[in-house]
Length: 106
Image 1: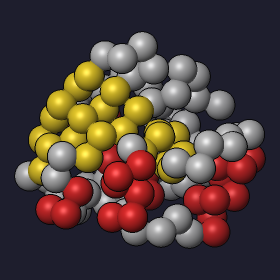
Image 2: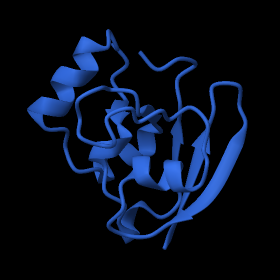
Image 3: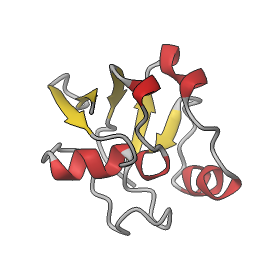
Image 4: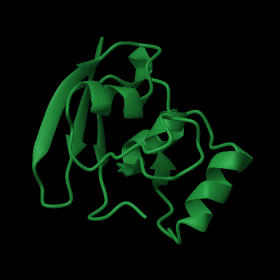
């Protein structure tokens, strides 16, 4: 288990434990974190699990695949730290990660 802090657009923090192997999206859904819709259930088809990853954590993530980058672009997102939570598997190396949810999922 590793700690993830999900911060909503209004600053509300939700620190939860997420087992290694689950995605950040699955961890959010299982813990009732607001701001992650996950309409497609984690299949990288909808972009409604968009998050912003704190800068100090970006290099520790698995690089975004072309499919994820295309979905982020299709949502009109331009932030360089935008990722899809369904595409980030939790690992022990991510223990303590902080991510922020957007005000609206597109």
